[in-house]
Length: 332
Ligand SMILES: C[S@@+](CC[C@H](N)C(=O)[O-])C[C@H]1O[C@@H](n2cnc3c(N)ncnc32)[C@H](O)[C@@H]1O
Image (cartoon, rainbow, N blue to C red; front, top):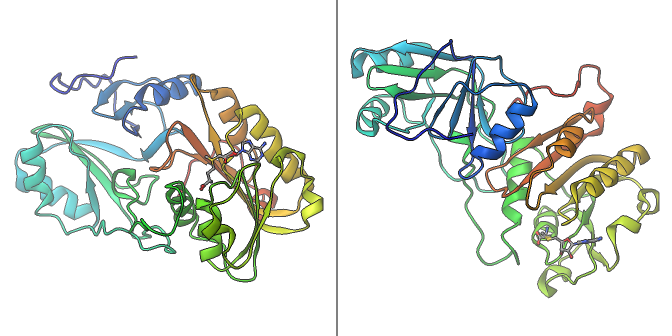
């Protein structure tokens, strides 16, 4: 797979039916996943993989453009009129022709990309995306999978409270879910040390049993509602902990082990929701990622704050509902 260089013209042999935006450095991983899903990449436009096949739920895409259209635009005014005529909110993905793209963007209604102050849900306003394939050729999609501009999830960061930056992953997962732990809820945090996620949960006012063989940062261990179990997460029987509203896991372990762990908790039926990081070392275990994605009630996302890892989100209610079929497209 070669990601096309910026100056080469984008050659489209067929109409574009989906576009997948890879996070920086993850173009190859996305291309591998698309190949596994049977999707050919017709061309790359920066980090955007253009395909002639209908959109599929590619976990490694930060954002999926679900209804792409290519239009000839003879002038900046024509591009602006086209976009404004379709809907209000547009995110520009500027890859080339930056100046022209900026001139178009500044004539569109502003889209607030203000950092979120957690707890807060991701923006719910309808957001489309566009880019210039050539000075006079515009690719747009009125619908996309991520509620964020180009999949980037900005937050007002806390540089004092949490003991690690991992808390941003959990903030982003909760913002995407539009839900987070609340007072009165019981949570388990597997692989909790040094305590970024436990800090998020306790700050939300929920109770949390933090499980790790390593210690929590003392200031996190001292937070109200936090209990530490210094043991392996794999040795805990879900029933032992009783019903929990949230099972969180950020354990570093082989994906196959994490899959077995998620399946065990799901089979036990004691957790209402799961948020689990699936980490990869070296080559990406696409097969196990696909097995996570196939779990009814689950979805797998490459969040903006994820590195070489995916986030598995699962909901017991969704699992029980008809229609929560594997491979569905992420919706926001
Ligand atoms: C990425 S760190 C977790 C960071 C944490 N979520 C935070 O926000 O600070 C991964 C953790 O998994 C823990 N871990 C690895 N194997 C484990 C096991 N079998 N049981 C419990 N924790 C484990 C490690 O000790 C490590 O603290």
